[in-house]
Image (cartoon, rainbow, N blue to C red; front, side, top):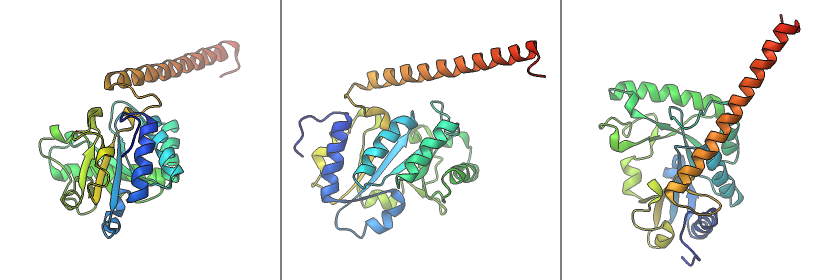
Length: 249
């Protein structure tokens, strides 16, 4: 692929999108069985570990190109509250762009496959209530520390590490802002079927290092937190003032 620079800028992400869009049929995980009938196809997936706002940028870029992907939402993560009013709006926006919403599950909360499957079902139902559609696809968070408990053989959901999917595609991931075999843009046309995973946190207007990407996220998150705390403080002061002046009884 001819590119000015292989980096983690949104510019380069759009270059990748445009290049694969010209040569492959692209779709979300839930359409794997349909896509595999194509001569060349790409399964496009995003794991939302840190921020839904970052995901919305990618979702819009893809929608502008008629591309649909799977966005995996983490309901038990420490970096965002998927059930806040603002984030529910973002999830709905991503879904309304035509993307698939999937469940990013953490198996460390479960001690057995049975308890994990029950937890996945409950969490999936929460997302179903948000988007108004059955959740089909699921993806495990941090599989390397899961002690072997996962839902890859689930009969009810389609796991992102399903053996049939992996055997029929060539897998590329930007985990830790590190393409294991070099940027995926260098592998387009080398394989008939690609399976691409990206994490929106690594992609920004101006490409930056992994460390700076995380620092920028922390600064942004701290600013939002301070604004929320200021609003709580203002609301509390107004409440106390209302009690004191008799306008609140």
